[in-house]
Length: 114
Picture 1: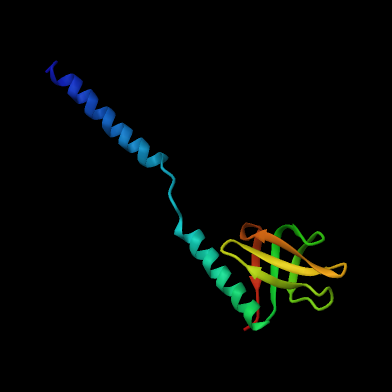
Picture 2: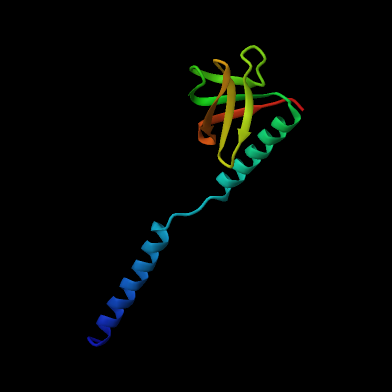
């Protein structure tokens, strides 16, 4: 019995180590990736068709606003590009255009009409 005690302790330690490593390993979420891909596709579609989209931001964006409808004829703002995890909006700046970008993480909602 005493000869088996070290083997038992070693086996128990290996099981505990395996369980701890499974718990500690980060898990990748496909939900976040799928959401970003869907949002990217939606925004690219609206950009290509020239159709409007209303975006709500968590943190103020573009002059402290949290709600923007693009394209915006009043301020000549438009959705200029969409990446895998960000979007960019352009607006007039002196005699040129300025581009502002924000990550999808700052986006709370996107509303649009079919």
